[in-house]
Length: 377
View 1 (cartoon, rainbow, N blue to C red):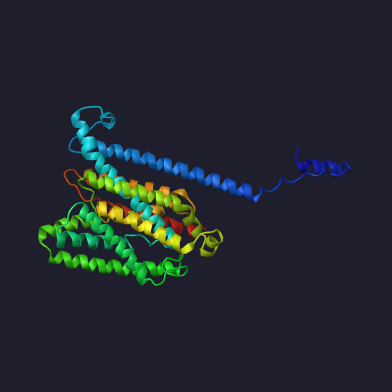
View 2 (view 1 turned 30 degrees about the vertical axis):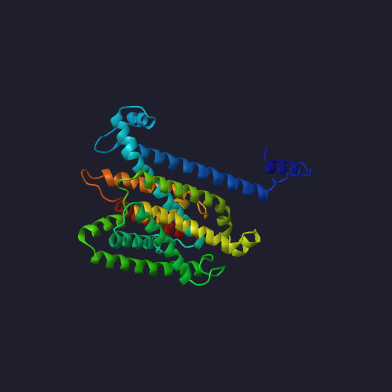
C-alpha cells in the first residue's frame, strides 16, 4: 500500500499516520561521479566506433586500385603471407599512403583541437589563422626559388609554420594573462584576426611567386598547395611518424593543464598551473602538429577546422576532446583520400579538394543543428 493510502486509512481510524521518510537526495559527489562515468562511457563508445570506421577505411584503401585485392588477401599480405604481387601492392604501395593520410589527419585534428580550446575561439584553426599559409609560402619559396624537393620542402614548410606563429605572437602584443595567448574573448579574437591578416599576406606572396615562375614549376607548386598525399617515400613517412609520436607524448603531459586553463586563468592559477608558460608550450605543440602535417601533405583544407567541433559534438561537453579529434581527423583525411583516388574512375584528384567539398557542408550542417537546438531551448 502506498504511503498516501496508509495515511488515509490511519486518519479514518483515528491513528497517527506513520511517517514515511523521503528518499535522501543524491550527494554532490555521487552525482558528479555518475556524470563522469556517463561521459567516459560515451567517450569510449564514440572512440570505438571511430576506430571501427578507420578499420573499414583502411581495408578499402588497401583493396582498391588498378589491381583490386580481395579482403582475405589484404589480411594475408598484412601478416607477410599471400602472393608476392599482393604483398608489393598492399605493403609497398598502398600501406605507406594510408599510414601517411591517417597521420596527417590526426595531426591536423589535434592541432585544431588545441588551438580552439586554448584560445576559446572556433575560428582559431591553423588553416584559418595563417599557420598553414605561412608553411605554404615557405614551401613554395623553396620549390620555385631554390628548386627544393622532398624532405627539403617539408623542412621549409615546418620553418614557415613556426615563423608564422612567432609573427602572430609578436604582432598580437605582450604574452600573458591578457596578452596574445590569453584566454578566450578579446585576446583570442585578436590572435585570430592578426592570423587572418598574416594569411592574406602569405597568400599574396604565394600568388606573386606563382606568377613569376615557369609554368611546369608552378603546376607542381599548385599541386602541393591544394594538399595531396600522392606517392609516399619511406623516409618522409618515418620522419612524420616519429615527429607525431613525440608531439603526442608532449600533449599527453600537457592535456590536464589544458583542461584547467579552460576554467579560466584565475581558476587555473588557483589549481597550481603556471598559466603563461603552459599556454606557450601548448601553442608550440599545436603549431608543431600543424607544421608536421602541412610539411607531409600540404595545407589540406578544413581538417583542422572541422575535426574538433565534430568530435566535441559526438563526445558531448565542452572539453578539448583530443583523442576523438585525432580520430575524426584521421577518418576525414583517410576517407577523403580513398574518395580522391576511386570516386571517379580514371580520375584522381588531390585529397585537399575532397576535404574542402566534404568539410564545408559538414560544418554548415553542424552549425545549423546547433542553432536549431539553441532556438528550441
